[in-house]
Image 1 (spheres, rainbow, N blue to C red):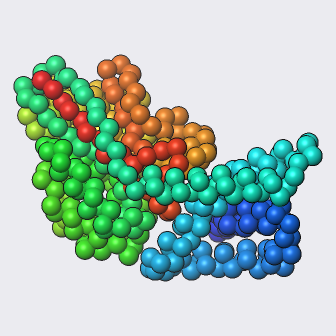
Image 2: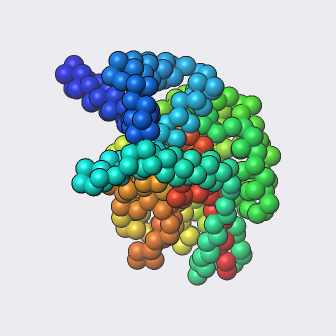
Length: 352
């Protein structure tokens, strides 16, 4: 057991060290060199800055400072945007004679433009509309799904905008598919605007609720008006809502669905945070599975990496009369930036 934990610790911090260099240090180092100022970041400065970043990251894991988090997250996001063109140019200059200074100026112009677009995009809310016609429905029902709001990374003011947008849709139910918050410093005041929603809220646990600590997250969410579905189902006339907690186990949906009594004649909607277990949902006769978690990559080209872990990272998919919808998320984790993705509120109309 000791060696297992030691191995996990070493793998984690090796990844942190590499990621910290690539995102926080490498773009600065290469751009200053290509611009003709190599002395600004020579080896001692690089090593010193690298370990300073690691120390600040370590402190941020134990700190409740939003200012520190915002600075680190935004630097991370900006560094990731610049990383891609720097790596592309690094490859080009291996086989071609190019002017490094002009290339660096072009990379700066492109990178700054992309950063501006990414910050602006992360402030906008888009509404995605889905429509289904269950055969036995006798009345119309409107649902709104939000996912991955990430209060902590995002502010209480952002949540107020989300709530206002939801209320404008006049839903019958609000469905939250996890990662509503992502920091232990989030308190009741930060999520108080949930109480102004004009519809009952049904909630399934995401991974960040687990990371933050369910022992205090659950009472706070319940006090804000959320009804948590934890391997549970509730029925309303012809509709059944089912919720399962997020877990690292890829068979979580299969295992937990077996414990729930499903209403055969109802239109069954399963809330599960990550887009895994769709096959089990199909086999169980679920009509619609709602997920999130992937953010559709959030910042291009991270979506390519996300696709290596999840076969489906966004959108509506259908198999054997069972639908799966993966939300790209309503907020953002880490930097308030989106590039090649967008913040989404999903409006789902069930028509008779």
